[in-house]
Image (cartoon, rainbow, N blue to C red; front, top):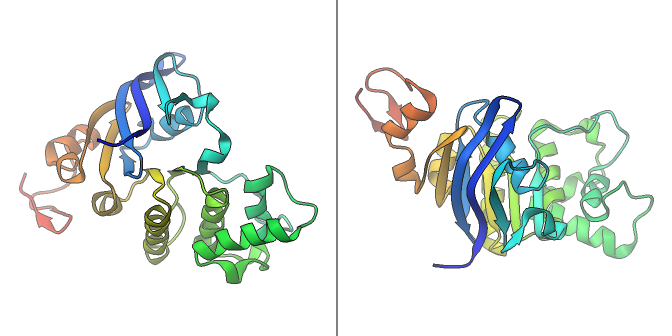
Length: 251
């Protein structure tokens, strides 16, 4: 067994009387890819925010590289949120958005080192040709590449992605998943990704956390996506002889 990048033990979160997470426990080894799947409102984004130290636990613990979540260096974590607060009409360039991942604020000017760092991140996501195109002129898939570049610009050891393919077409989603996989292979980073794409989770993840407020399972994809787990998470998942991952399954 390798070193642990993320250790979550009995994590529970309540918002008023609502149990957003209930006793969730799992571990991610350094260099692994873990995906989180579950229905809307099942606590997936809340879990990521807790790992990022943005939401307090009511009970349990979270450790990242052996430290409490709030003590981890921000440079060790890259994050792509599901909901982007950026106004697309904001007069800025992609390279400037990437630079905010280094500086924490919009750059007033670029020195040679900052420009090289940002262009290198854009190159890693096959988007260097977009560096000077206005953000307002980018497609959804192109913008997601810029956000991915922003998240990896400091070469984080842990990459956290919340529905990175939201709002883009299937071809762009495939490209994005390939870029994430390529970055993970080249950097040996640990990846934790929330996704609604079961195919992506099945084929790209080392482990899958199936979550519906309570933890249903944390297992390799072939086990996690067994029909009993899918039914527990999502209810009735289809009709008789439904095709899942190219395999015919009967009710």
